[in-house]
Image: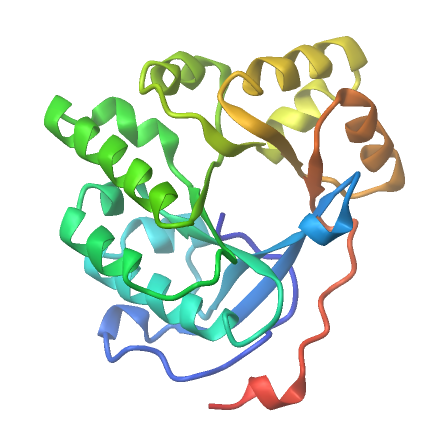
Length: 239
C-alpha cells in the first residue's frame, strides 16, 4: 500500500505524465519471513510531494498513470538484487491488453504483485470480475507471485468464490491492532485467511512485542516500522 515508510531511495526520471509530477522517488519497506529470510521481499512505495493524504492522491490517479508508474517502478527495482512487491489496483487488472504487455516484461520471478483494493471486486460487473480472474491467472502463469492486500473478513468469501489461490494474503495494520490483544482471535484470523493463500503476512509491526505476537499467531511474515530502513547503493540514486 502507498503509505509513508522510509526515506527516499531513488529520484529517477518518471514517465512524462502530468499526473505523476508530484511523485519524487521510491521508498522500500521490508517484508520479513520468520523461517527463511531469503524469502524477504521489499515493498515498493512512492514518495509524493502533496498536501493530500496518500491514499486520496493515488485514488485520483487515472488507470493510465497507475500503469505507467507500475512499469517505471518495476524497471527501477529490477536493477537491484532481491524480490520486490508492487501495488496494482483491481481496475488495472481489467485491462487485459496492459496485462499482456506486463507479461512480456523480463522479471526473473522477482516481482510480487499486490492487489491493493480487494473491495473494488464487489463493485465490478460480472464480465469485469471474470477479466480480473483471467488476469491474475495469466500473471501467475508468467511467473509473477500475486498477493491480496487489505483483506477483511467480509471480503473473504467474495474472493473465495473466485477460486484463486494467492501466493500470500496480507492482514492490514488496523486489523492486526484490533486483534493483537487476543492471541486466540488473531490465530483464528490467520487460519481463516490461509484459506485464500499459501502464506499470511501481518502489517503494522512496530515493536518487538508486535513481532513476537505475530510469530505466535501462525503468520508467515511481518511488515512495519519495526524494521530498519534499507541501504541502497548511491549509484542508483541518480538517473
